[in-house]
Amino acid sequence: MEVFNAIGRRKAAVARVYLSEGNGEIIINKKNLETYFPSGILQYVVKQPLNKLGVADKFNVKVNLNGGGYKGQAEALRLAIARALVKLDQENKSALKSEGFLTRDSRVVERKKPGQPKARRKFQFSKR
Image (cartoon, rainbow, N blue to C red; front, side, top):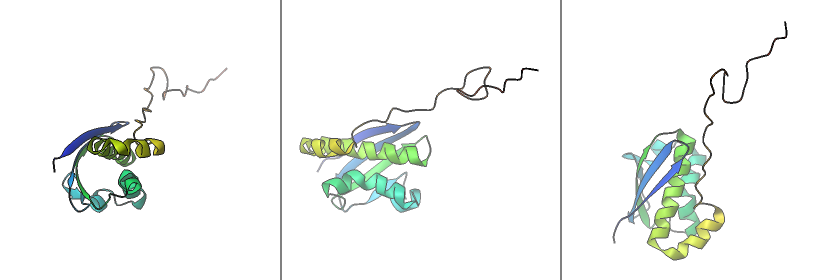
């Protein structure tokens, strides 16, 4: 079987995924999923598209992840895996789209403005 690749982004995180036939191993930056994401919630987020289609133990996933925090990385990885599964078989698209796994969450941090302590927060006003 050939290798299917896809890319996923979230906030500042970028995930490059290589999906191949295998036994359900997920390797992120040369580490196991359980080592890279110790939190059970983030492991669940990463596996959501695979579990939705019931193919969690049929594919090996090799990932290059960089940028962002752990939550953004997990969600970027979820998007990349979902996109790779659609490349594998177009019939998977409707099931993944209905769950929202193919939607790129474009929310990013608003930039800090000059003359203010944060993006929208102003310095305290003193009348006297």
